[in-house]
Figure 1 (cartoon, rainbow, N blue to C red):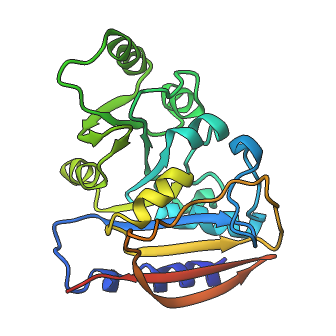
Figure 2 (cartoon, rainbow, N blue to C red; figure 1 turned 45 degrees about the vertical axis):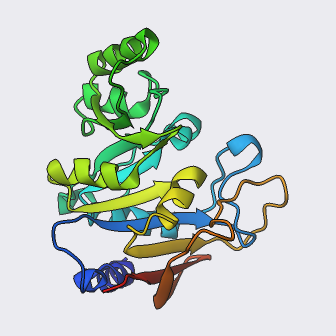
Length: 251
């Protein structure tokens, strides 16, 4: 996989931060999609889109970031481990810090992330949730349950059912996260795309169609500005094509 490692080192260079403050997190948004831009099946059912070769590339990418973030919907549907178990053990690769965006604390105590942590086989997951000045009793109970099972709860500001991406990144920066890999799902992808905080976009395209029943992500409405991007490189990995862009930010 030396070609994949070289590809990632090339497209994840600090050049994406030229002209921007150093006191911020470098954000890589990445996901796999079908040719018709679907990332999940009917009812948000998990789809195995990435082939084994591009999945291995994803694990290399994880090892190059301080933290990895997904939304609670993906956490509930896929129950991922967010580690680097596919990489060769002799490399002593460090798994990224797992982070779940969960405004209402729906994350399950029975998740693989918490089981792995309790078994000393994974890092302690952080759950970023909405700050409540006077939290309801149900929220307090869920928080206490998750903390008892090993989760770290991080409250940040939000509006409605959505958390502020800026507040999220500030909270993670204060916890010494300097590079963040965002894997989705659909709501998280859309939120980050329009947030102005993404530096690198890396998309794995699988040679398959899902059809109308599949779930896609949204890229904003008529009045929502979308980022301008510069193509960096593309790589055929097994049956998939991985495409990397640098997001252009105003200087």
